Length: 582
Ligand SMILES: Nc1ncnc2c1ncn2[C@@H]1O[C@H](COP(=O)(O)OP(=O)(O)OP(=O)(O)O)[C@@H](O)[C@H]1O
Image 1 (cartoon, protein in one colour):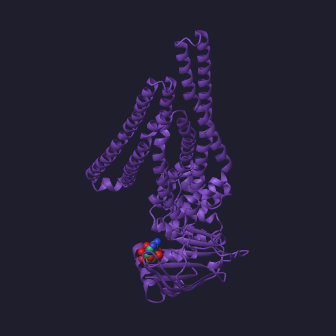
Image 2 (spheres, protein in one colour):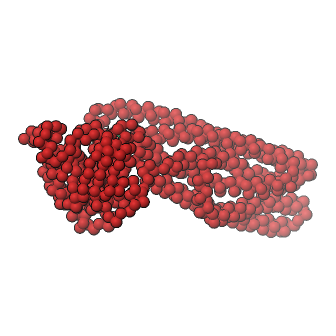
Image 3 (tube, rainbow, N blue to C red):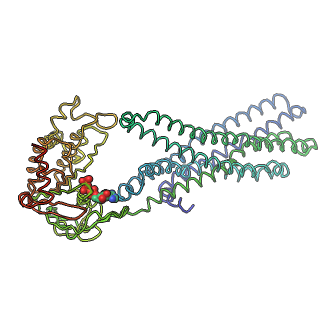
């Protein structure tokens, strides 16, 4: 139960509703107890009438009264059961909602490396499946737990007061029933976990096969995929069958043990009746008690396994909730960020792979300047931009923003001044308008259009039927690589940040469009700092300064003209690209 302590704050939050729910649960059960005692009384009346100790009319009117009481209390019990579910089960839904939000907010705070170290499927599972398991603890366990306790607390003493020997024989099989249900629940839990695992394998397989359908068709992999699917389905069938088998045992075993209790009541009760020790009504009353107790007793076993499952799920959730973000925000909130960036012998090693992506990199860039970063793939260009946005902290050296060490700045203050366009443009399944508005939530449609023009994508957008209202994503249209890049450039520009980070974001546009965007960018970035990662000299040539990286180190540094004047990577690249153009 250690892990489930995490939920105490939510129980405290909803304590009034919960207390109300507990009171209602007790009332609902108390009303349910009228049935057995009035059934007994009704039988007693029938016996009296049969023995002529009561007139026919008196017996009929008393019976009708008892029936009225039974119906009335049953209706009240049903009404309070409804309120019970409305309070306790609702609280469990509130807790589920709060916990999901808490986990989601925490995920958002965690650093890049957390996402590298954990699979997306795992993150999704913990926020959905595991939270659902925990909800069972917050709601049904409390509800059935209180119901069971109330019934035990009232019924068992009552039965012993009314007929101690009969009570003992009647209750004898019930502990066995509870243990049995507990064992079966464990097996069910174990097998249903396997079914769950199988289902997530199946959905990963299907998702990949649909997403990769182009590759599958091009490589004629359909028969192979079909046979893989058949094997998977066979495995799924086996797992589901084994779950179905144990499920099938659940009710028959329960019925068997209830049957034994009922037989005890009838046999022992019957003998006591024959000996004149008890009336027939008491036997009927006890039969009803047995049936009323069966479910709560079975529930004890079931609840134990639910609590175990909830504990295991909460443990998985806590594992993530206890992870601290690696990037800790500083406190400094400058009035304005100018955009002077200094790298002072900056080195960076990726913690998970141990790859040293940057080695003693030093440079300075002033506000209004553009720094182009070139180099072969894997030379550290993206890493350099990620360090500016503080997605990672450098392992050695120091990065300064306007002279302040980057760690001292408040993260929000830094990142709200950055407009980043990543290498892989990511657009959300939303309209084009909203995708650009992501950069500035308040932007009007005119402003969105203005920035789409600057990113040279406005014409394309106007060509779509629904223009800015065009839906993107799985159920919308698919943009070309170049269009995606330009939409994400518009998104960064509309933010009007002080620092731009463009990561090879013109790679999929033709050189003419590239020229046009670059000239727009030059106008936009007059007073701003721009980092421009590229593989093309055409993108880099107008930059104020160019860095060439190789295996994490700067191998060349200078302006376009300076670098052209010396042999090396930049000059070779320039000549190679000039030749291919010609
Ligand atoms: N998240 C990561 N975790 C571990 N290693 C990484 C990660 N990202 C990049 N690397 C490694 O760090 C090195 C530098 O990668 P980086 O992405 O910065 O290169 P790049 O110059 O931007 O390459 P490209 O031109 O292909 O985009 C590479 O060896 C890469 O494998």
